[in-house]
Image (cartoon, rainbow, N blue to C red; front, side, top):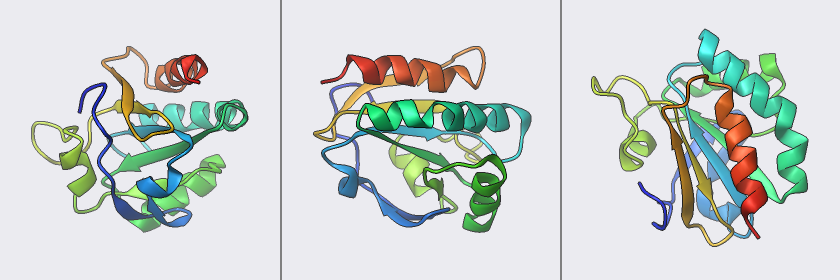
Amino acid sequence: MEPNQLAPDFEADSSKGRVRLSQLKGKKVILYFYPKSFTPGCTREIQRFVELYEQFVNLGAEILGVSVDSVETQKRFAEKYGAKFPVVSDKDKAISSTYGVLNEKGSSAQRVTFIIDREGKVVSVLRNLKKAEEHADKALEEVKKLP
């Protein structure tokens, strides 16, 4: 997935029940993939998204976190860190595959964040940032640029 492509729709279980990307059309969406719940980098990343959540909401944006962990794990992860946004289970790796973010072994998602505009188009892709938590800050910068 690269900028200017339509973000592929998906439906999956999450910490907040069933979610479907297309139901968020009209909102800006931060779709962030991460390797594994409860690991140090992924924990810092969700904590930073939680800290900035109200700023995203005030800009008309919704956040979706995705990893290949089970929905039970995602619920515990979201609850422990107070995530008000859905944390999605991609147990069958279909979403990660579609977005091209499975790691080389195919065992987990890479840390990649997609910024999607109100029309459902990918406008920015964040990858290879030095710190996991930078994804939240960089995503906020990108969302601020969107109408």
